[in-house]
Structure formats: C-alpha cells, structure tokens
Image (tube, rainbow, N blue to C red; front, side, top):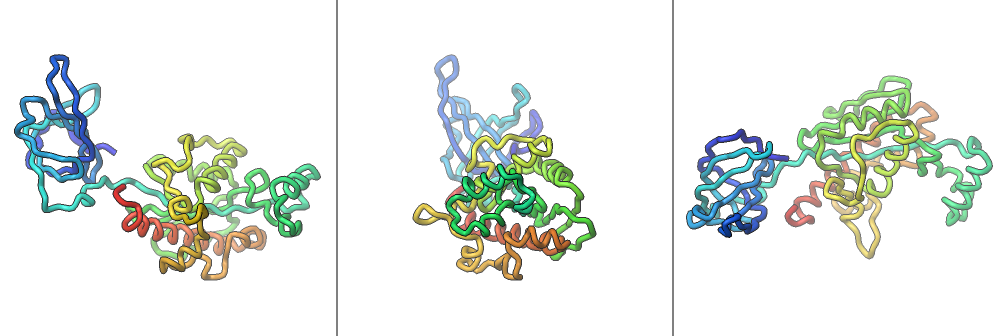
Amino acid sequence: MAIKFGANELVRDQHFLVNSKEVKQTKNGDDFYVLELSNKEGKIEAKIWNNNIPQCNFDVGKIIEINGKTQEYNGKISITMDSCQIVSTEEASDYFPSISTLVFDIETLGKKFEELDETEQDYLLNNLERAEEDKEKAKEKTAVYSIFGMVCAIGAYDINNKTGIVLSLSTKDIVPEKENFVYKTFTTEKELLEEFWKITPKYEQFVTYNGDNFDFPYLMIRSGVNRVKMPFEIKKWGSEKSIDLANKIRQNGRSFQLEMLCKAFNITNPKAKGVHGGEVSALYNSGEFNKIADYVARDAIATTELYLIWKEFMSGQI
C-alpha cells in the first residue's frame, strides 16, 4: 500500500521508518541512495542525490525526520530528500503500514455416502481414507473433500475495522450472535462463493488456521466446480499474502489443534458451546443454520485473537 502524495508536494519535518537502503550510481558515476520509507499509511520510495548525502543522517530500522519534495516519474510518486535526521524517541512499530487484513474460516458439508456412486465410494474408502480402519467413520468424511463436499458457510473478520461477516447457505433468516457481525444468507453455493470473492480484492493479507492446506484449496476447487471466477490466483501457499497460523505455530514438525492453542493462550474456544466441524453436515440437514453461522463466526474471532498474539509477541518484526 503506497502513501498517498501528489506530485511536487513539499515534505517538511515528516517522520518515516527506514525499511531499506540501496546505493546506486548515476550515469556519471556519482553515488546516490534509494530508500524505502513507511508510516501507518503505507510505503514510499525516496532518493538522496549525491549533493544532499552530507545533509542526511539515517539508518535502516530507524525513524527519520525528512525534508524534501515529491516527484512523479512513469506514474510513480517518490520523494527527493534534501535533508534528514534520526529521531530516536519514537518506536519503529508505530510506523509499520496498516495492512488491510481479513481473517476467515470455512465450514463444509458433504454428500451422504449412499449418494456417491460405486467408483466414488471406492475412491473415498480405499484411497482418500485408506488409513482409516473404521470404515463407518470414513464414510462420514465426505465433507473434508471438495469433490464430494461443498462450502456451506464462511466466517470472516476485518481486523482494521473490527467487524465481521458470515456468508451462509440457509433457507431462513439467521441472526448474528455478535453485535459487530453481519450475516448474509444464500440458497446456492455459487452465490455464496461469488459474494466471498467480491469481498476479497480490497484486502492485502489473509489470515487462516490451516488455510494453506484446506480453506484456500477447497475454495479454489469449489469455485471451479461452480464456474465462479477467482479475483486472484493462489500461486504460493505461505506467501506474504497468506498467513497460516497452523504453519506459524508448530512444534516437532506438527501443528496443533486450534482448540488446544485456545486453551494454551487463554482464548475462548470456538467449540465451547458444543458445536464442532464434524457436526456441520448434520446441523445443516436438520435446518440448524444459525448454529453453523455462529460457530464459524466464533472460529474467525478465535483465529483473530491468536493472530494478534502471534503478531505482537511471536513474529518478530513483520
């Protein structure tokens, strides 16, 4: 996210964090610096030409007070710095850009085992769930697989605005459990997915728990099945755009169950009211749409609380 400046604006006594510096040379062989600066609004590039280097005192990771002027080149705004000095009394964390972040979780439901044809039944039991010795238990896992299941609810929380939304399949009105949540209902999975992807482009970062392995691939495949176009390609799991806390908080090469981390970090367990993911199909078939919506909202809130703890205490400098 870029800081919003116009061209030819004077920049006087403004403070920025120095994120990086690079030494370059002009065609004449003169050294000049290119800095990446940031504040809460975003980032901007700044240049210090050779004749102004003696007037500039700066270092990476420090807050500096600058004087200069903006310029536009090829549609990009940057700052040409006349002078700067280090300001030692302010915290660098106050100058990290505010990244628009959406925390989300999905709930899925599956076909009944009897609804699968013989080939699909065999594939589920003897391929996807071959490690499950209890075949009756394996028959209940259709919701886990996007080729046999579907998305029935998405709970999402906007960290910056502190507001939440649940998109849910439902044949009746449902009422939010939390005051800062809005519930929207749909009669088809296609409509639900279209609404979710309509929301996502304004966000720069997504936070999930096991989203790289489950939520994102499931949404991608179900979007293809429903012929719903995604606004961006998920090119690389674990990229800066996707923060998967299941990958961030691990030990001995394994991630923990979300509810176990909730207990450890003193976060309200989303399953505390007796609902868990394995019950979603049964709840949906019995028309308990509000219980599903409330559960996925609680999951989004718990994931948000865990993310804020991870970001402040465990992630270092982001």
